[in-house]
Length: 364
Image (cartoon, rainbow, N blue to C red):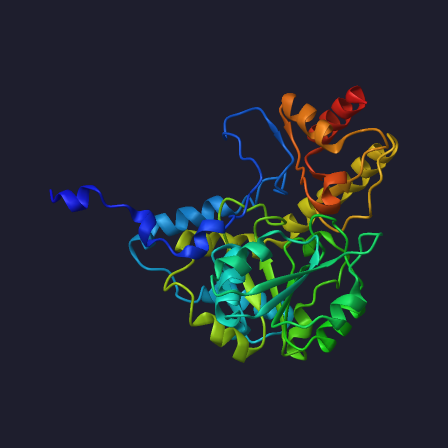
């Protein structure tokens, strides 16, 4: 081998923007065989639709794995479009909602553009802004003391794209729909409502129906949370026909596999099972909130499948997080901004929530 090739150093070819880049940090993922109670990444504690098994068998029996999947995930597009009275082409099905976000940023965020977001919200937005590697800027607008969006400050902000989780993460708070629509109307740019947790909120909270009369509005969704398919990676983004057509230009040829499509379709169509398990999560959310409040925790009303908890005075959130981890109970702790005063707890099964509560009670 040529001596020059032996001394090849890839670092000398890396784009300079990567030297200071900090990637997204996901929650801890213990081995699948461990006995850890995992309440740190907002997964659904219940299994997905039992109809999935038969649907997967059908794919295997028909020998469909040797063929490419539908380019548009057309059947899933049509199922979603029917529920919201949309044109199927207003929906782009993606490899998890994170792909939808990445495609959105790639399509519209260019050199010197500003991405606006409340702070805190989904921590992937600033990472995506930097991942574009075009010198885009991220403008964080702090939430109010009550953890709600500073809507007036957001309305006055200027940027190419405004992003927020609705309901918000990690706070779990849902802003009034009318206020968000007023924000969409007033913002002179694109607005993304990231609805990963919307199914755990009150009915008629979603902004998807309003994409028909708000051309600058986009809404992203995922099957990871309420449909218990975090291991599958299916999501979608909704917007005007024109906006989605531009975003679609950048997607991978076959971004969602045939098994992913069939499993997502089956889960989406099994509405009775979906509602049953979603309601169980909501019931457990209310019960766990009451139990923790009895120990002195301060917790805003949650419209998600997690609680944003401030321990009683004198109790360190980080110490509590580490102590639970020693007991094989994982929750989430963010060590920056206002989040450093809180812990985030995913709603588990009744048994998991009881074990968590009893462990915290002993700790206190």
